[in-house]
Image (cartoon, rainbow, N blue to C red):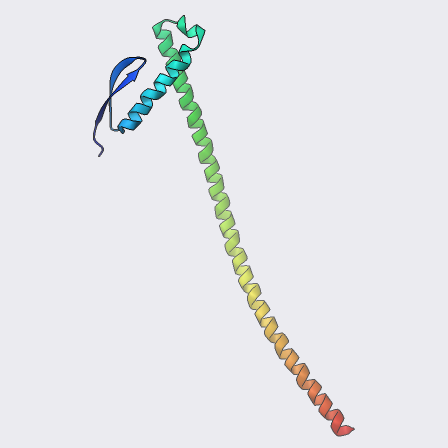
Length: 138
């Protein structure tokens, strides 16, 4: 099991200690994300007029919005992956089927070539016999 990590971070110009099993880099990333959200809001004029509770609620709504959008993107990607996996399965099945057909066709071609070769030998033998019969009769 991972060890518990304690890391000091600065969020909104205040020092906090975050504790979790995630890596220190991950915990810093979380703090950085929150700081970026704060910075986005501070650029908005309306944000300055809100009381601290409304600022917190707005931040929570925004983070939840980001979360649900990303979750929807993940769902869409998973659905695409499932569709692509099915398509790959179908293509592999088709490839196996076509490979089998190709093998059968190659066997048929080989058999027909052999038959052609035998027939050409037969034609030569018959022509030779025909020529011999003409020479003996004539």
